[in-house]
Image 1 (cartoon, helix red, strand yellow):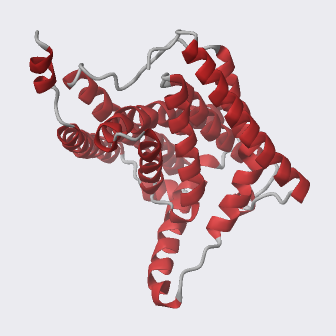
Image 2: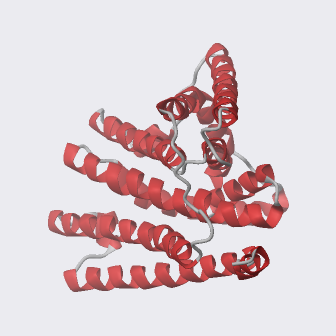
Length: 310
């Protein structure tokens, strides 16, 4: 086939974006409705789970809640991304270049080094106040945050190893794969074709990634995480590196919530950021920058040796 004919058959990035959004709405609504119908037939609902009025209701509703979360993740993010890839096989939305283990280790090391600084940024973001003229908006945002936290608290605060395992699967593994396929896979590829600048693409995708979670007072930390996941993919050309980073981040929260619950701590106490000395924060900054530079340099070296095709 002549090259011109091949290029003409490639869909525009805007068409790809429209398709992704259509798939997102269709699959999300369809699967959520199906899950809700199953819940109704089973006599389960979210309010029973949140209120925990009876042991039986809470047990049935917890299973329903896990099913709803898994279906939501699967339908909203994973299915649209995979279906778009099947429809547009000329694009490689989920690259899996052979990647040395060192990159996976550096991704985890970065998250560990960044943790104290991330906690400090999260604490600042949680206490952001709006100007007097926007107090109504701030109050609405905090009400949405409190409503969301009520459900999150019931899901993550568990004291049983079996439930911890389920939390790691439903709250860490599933979202890591589905969201990275969607945001760093499909959406970032489409955005790159639109903006033709990888750095702009990574940050715009990270902002959308954070905004879609509708947790306004955790917006900045999630943007930073999204950006790092984007650079993980950019520097390795392997979707499984950001998937690992995403999984480790979410799984750490699930394990920490389990630990806090077994120690008798509340969800609110868990959310309170640990205070470190300035020396620790300085060390976090230095280590984070050093690991990021090392990650980048190893990526360039690996590419220069001809083992990657960008």
